[in-house]
Length: 253
Image (cartoon, rainbow, N blue to C red; front, side, top):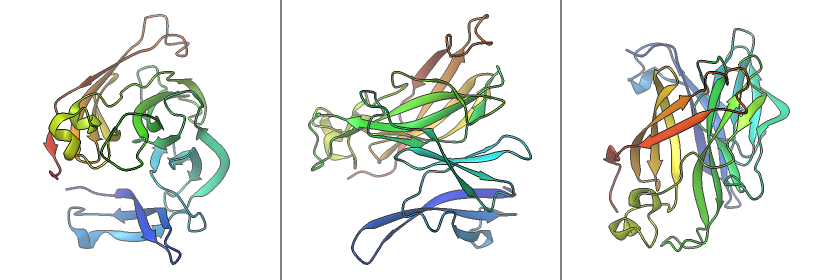
């Protein structure tokens, strides 16, 4: 039985002029959370913001709790009670020209602690691509990036990936015109998107991600620190990413 669960979700609606609106919202449950009726919906966290989505909560301690969110640049909000959130004037991450995250950065799952007491934070990102694909006017490729956040002050970035940790490579991740049968099965070509993760051992994680908005895959992520690098992670950290076969398909087209 799942207890005391907080769930962040994105409510998408179409407004009167035909534009789409996304609002990051909150639902909570105290007991028997596999039953829909036990969930309480609290509505949008930022009702005055037109576009907000992809929330990643970090409970650093009893007094410092952060919500990293959004999909253009990653904004920072603070909370004490997990119900009310104050938007800061700072961004955790911004896009970078001429990098794999030049078009957007979007919060991934919650940051998790490493053996050196700093946090690893995964984020989804996109850049422009000229790969031919079956989706009209689609010119983005999604990639996975990482940052190391200061274990004492998680709003401070100690290191950030120069190259993507993971990019679409397999046919069910690419779904472009080179992907054989998968050219007709995926919803959105050239997309890998991390949805959740779990620590399985020290500096070792299982990651659930989706390909082409159509399949779910499983990967293993391992970090290795040279013995002298714990004091300065910006110089030495090795990250290995092992992608397994997809676990199941959500649907076929």
